[in-house]
Length: 219
Ligand SMILES: Cc1cc2nc3c(=O)[nH]c(=O)nc-3n(C[C@H](O)[C@H](O)[C@H](O)COP(=O)(O)O)c2cc1C
Image 1 (cartoon, rainbow, N blue to C red):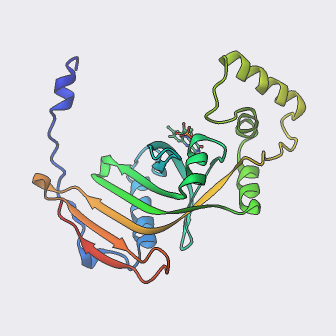
Image 2: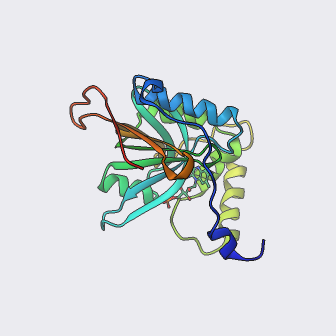
Image 3: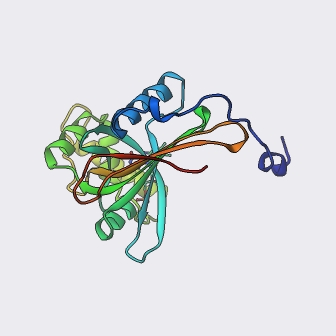
């Protein structure tokens, strides 16, 4: 295909799957886990990849892809550099959206919630589970800061590899760690034929973390 207009004007039929109220799990975490397993089993590439939306100190939104590394009743956990652009945004406005774009399944989940740093013990445990090269890279790179050249970055990596050879402990930089997102809105979107999609949204009180209510939204 050489014509971008051909890519822009495609209409895909989103098929026969459906999402009915009676089929929903009782809470959004359980429903999310069902769909995450489906995405993994049905071959979605990087099923735990999500687009994290933040609001900067200047009120300007930004987004980027991050990997989900944990989910349970306490929320959704990801790891990053807390001095990064997203980290600075979360320090100013600790609220975020997590969007899971499972296009191949004609599904999308959007989580809205409040983000807080995970405790040091959890960040340490996850840091320790990462390959040596990732720990070196995470130490070498002050995420989101400019650097003069790729060579400068690679020189920093070589320095750190000399200081911390394979098999030795690379300490976790204090700026590197996790966030836990405590959800108060979770929307499940299932594509249907002729754009009559299913949208079911769980909400609960943001402060009181009350019981979840479910509503159907128009597509
Ligand atoms: C598939 C994929 C997975 C990624 N996973 C992570 C991740 O888990 N943590 C992270 O900090 N950045 C991850 N990134 C890089 C981010 O998208 C982003 O470039 C980086 O976090 C800096 O974002 P910021 O400048 O907005 O803070 C990933 C990118 C892609 C494409």
